[in-house]
Image (cartoon, rainbow, N blue to C red; front, top):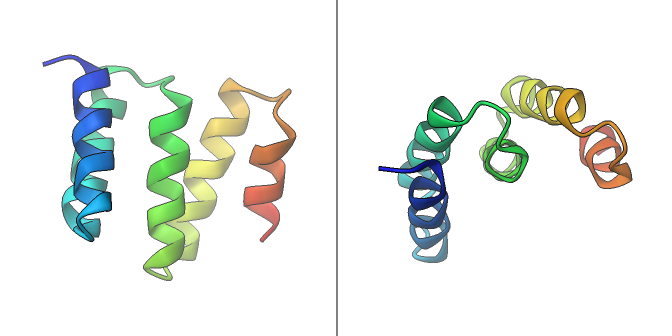
Amino acid sequence: VLAKEHFTKGNQHFAKGDIIGAVAEFSLAIRKQPDYVLAIVNRGNLYTLQKEYLLAMQDYNLAINYAPQSPQLYYNRAI
């Protein structure tokens, strides 16, 4: 299974309100493709929803490492 497929499944889980399933799928996408910034950010956003702020910050920092030119990533990290 490709990283993109896990990313798509993660979005589908989130659309159904299944945050735990979405986090699991985004994590699998990241495991398959460690520089998959969209999956990293989506997982960070879900951690924020779960009030897992340390995990969210780690994901935002990781995403910034891969895409330092993206101002949105810095904004996500700041909130």
